[in-house]
Length: 64
Image (cartoon, rainbow, N blue to C red; front, top):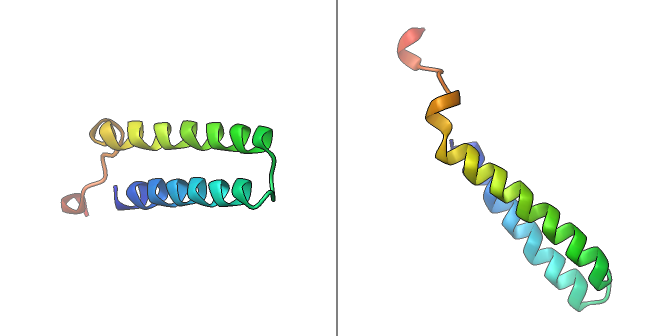
């Protein structure tokens, strides 16, 4: 779960850097919109995975 939380934070940080890239004219509005939308989808998937982690994460330290 911690890795998913870390991944979400990294994706949100990338969105912040995309905003800086747009403000500094390193990318245009179309590129920003495309990349930002993709990161929104990634973040949505990560949040969904975190909210449903009990259904797919069955690893247990007591089984070792």
